[in-house]
Length: 96
Image 1 (tube, one colour):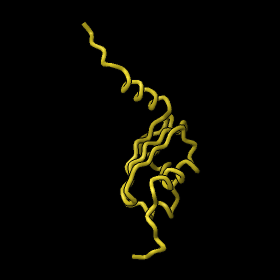
Image 2 (image 1 turned 180 degrees about the horizontal axis):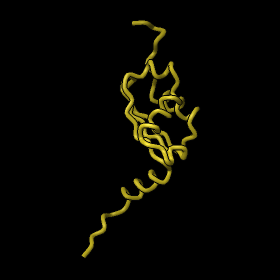
Image 3 (image 1 turned 180 degrees about the vertical axis):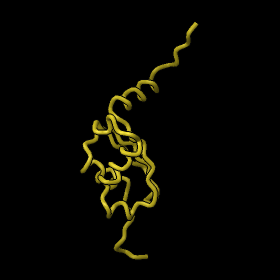
Image 4 (image 1 turned 45 degrees about the vertical axis):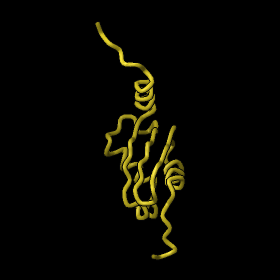
């Protein structure tokens, strides 16, 4: 095991993303190899999911990409995020 290659912490991954992407909200969970990130950024507006993911990978940079073996992410615009949070908070409406 090469001691110079340390596995990134979820905090480091989050900081990397936040450093190059103007995020309204970023949460990263992970165990050093597999990560799950929820990223909310206004610049995702009007972009496809693939384009959003490419933007996040670009924000991570080469070094971080090599260290992360798997990154799953949920990329949302602020409007999408607020809508999804509102949906979670709202009781279901029943139509009579």
